[in-house]
Image 1 (tube, rainbow, N blue to C red):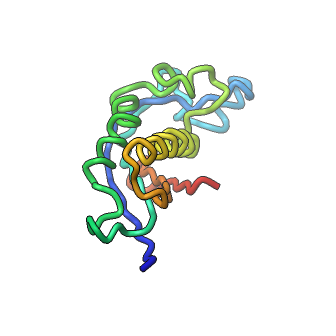
Image 2 (image 1 turned 135 degrees about the vertical axis):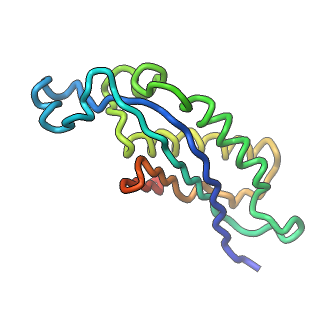
Image 3 (image 1 turned 180 degrees about the horizontal axis):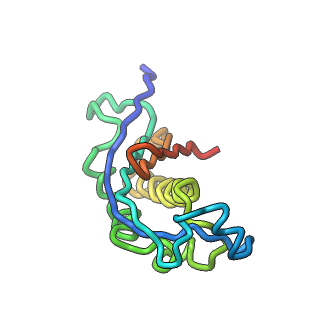
Length: 150
């Protein structure tokens, strides 16, 4: 059998950020980002969906133990981002070259989890077909960004 399964874990975290690009003047930043360019930043209660895919392990009946996936997300993402200021506390965004938009946050989380999942698979000799399929972040109830590693 070769059924492909998609497994999603949902987690939440709270973080602050300021939308500001070093590639624009201060006036351009205000024009482009509006109130989100507040020099002290603003915060969100993010909802993160992490979806993995792969072939079902018929011995266990699982794609991946959800406890292991939860642990990976917690140690790689939540512990680093929760109750932090993305532009001040996260090296990826700190120098201002990468604006801490939700789009860029999706890409950052993808890179970290893809690497961690590959390491986990190798360390645990897991099903090598397990892949990161999608990162989805709800920034607000009305704004959602999805990234699939393209």
